[in-house]
Image: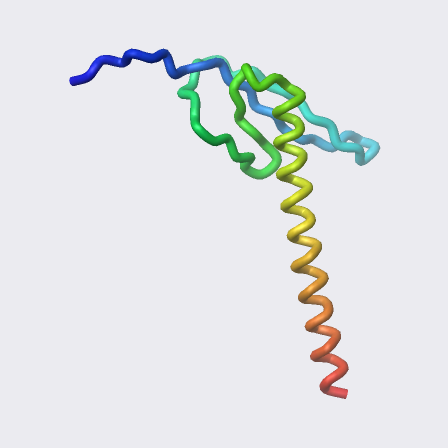
Length: 94
């Protein structure tokens, strides 16, 4: 069996988007209690992003918010396309 020659674990945090009572969004950062393996890629899941401490909070927020914005833009585009198709179908049947 081979020996581990590189230390490939780091402290991680979770960035998560919440909504306050006024309807405004804000991001919180929660420290993980255990060291986790460093991954090659970090992809948000839902409104959360697990990230290595070395990234810093600013980069983590940017990655998470960019991802959420991109997903919502895709959702709006799909909804717009579906709405146009439904209206076209409705007008065709008149």
